Amino acid sequence: MRLFIAINFPPEPVAAFVRAQDALRRASPSASFSRRENLHLTLAFLGEQPSARVPDIREAMAAARFRPFSLSFDRAGRFRREEGDVCYLSCAESPPLLAVQRRLARGLTERGFALEDRRFVPHLTLARRVQLPPGFELSSILERPIDAPARALSLMLSERRAGRLVYTELHHT
Ligand code: 2AM
Image (tube, rainbow, N blue to C red; front, side, top):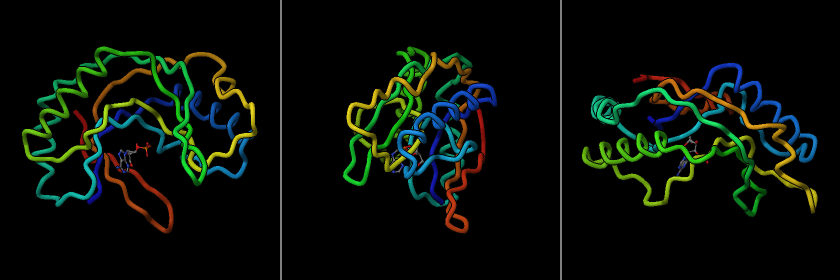
């Protein structure tokens, strides 16, 4: 099973994320947009794992000692890709987010999970294969910062069903 650990957000900030997607869609109609229910912030990507490993993952999640906090998504960015950019929202620096991500990564590593060595860049992917017209001001897709409460850590299952990416929450802290 393909797994990752993420923060999911309540309807109000999600509606604001979707408005940012709508603005992006007007600029790049051919991009591939994450579905509303799939919008999330990933803290750890586990990749393919046997189901027998889920108890260890739950243990690492508990060891991360998540406590609710609030995030402010205040900028839009892109990762350049040959097939078109990945566009995302990112949040103002958040010590509680970074602390919980570090504890989670440590707990997973201690239990033998191989995490990517890359620096954690908190981002919420809005769309892939984005082709923006030259000079397009990406910050214009965000009318104002989006305040979003982080209420739990969720263990997410990622599956393709009938060509669609479907995420299911298996556990939350
Ligand atoms: P992304 O949105 O930047 O692709 C499920 O795929 C989640 O795990 C996404 O949030 C994805 O981030 C993240 N992720 C992190 N590393 C990944 C990897 N190597 N392959 C696929 N998804 C990854």
